[in-house]
Image (cartoon, rainbow, N blue to C red; front, side, top):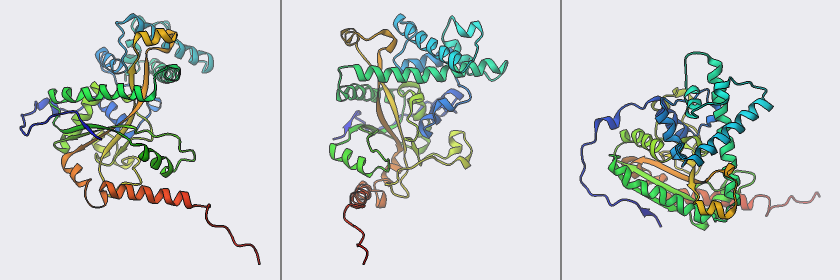
Length: 351
């Protein structure tokens, strides 16, 4: 059953004109990462314009450098990244980059577009390793914690649902905002219908849909999400779909296309859909009781799906071949094909 986070009235208030201001480089890069499922490991540079931009992204990961525990955690990940690059990639780092007084300087140096290019490349390489190591160790922490997946999903759900009123207060023109859990029968159907050789992962057990008033509201809404809720660098590559915004609207060439689509959707179905690893902060007593070393941090991640669409497109998505019952029919047809294949037919023996 879906849960609506908002009690919306029919009145509308004039929006602040700055709501529709063009996205700056940092926001645009984050939006593209979500909508296109880009891996930051393939980026040639970061796009942080200020230390405040760095603080904002770290806060989305529940990391605050003014907390000694978080600062120690980030320095540990930084050291591990540099050690890997020195020992296995044979890179050498200048002293100020090897031991920065302010860790945010590494993010800013990776974002520079002028000056000595080698320093920017080295800083960028460090960030890529930090991105991987932090995620790897968070997965290790999640595996070792006594908390169930259901309990972690409940915490993530509470965090996202609490964002609904905040979005409305910020001027996001929401028509509806609600979350839902995928039912057991839907999980089974999706696992069998998937084309993967080993169908073991369902990415969208927890899903949220945001419907905004107009198509022009979509980009500003995505900007709010990357600034206030979703850590763009942990969007899941290959699990982000965009059939609503043109590539040029995202600042990329039109010939790059719109990315992958869901094969079971109708031909005219339009939606922005992305899945990310969403951070869940463990309580201090949970960390202490389990005896986890500080090196693993205090954050684990669960996969959460977000859908963003305008109300006109949302209505069109519920009609004709796009209707949800037709979507399910196409899934069940695929399930039937896979279950039948090779199991009920044998070649006739030679005469």
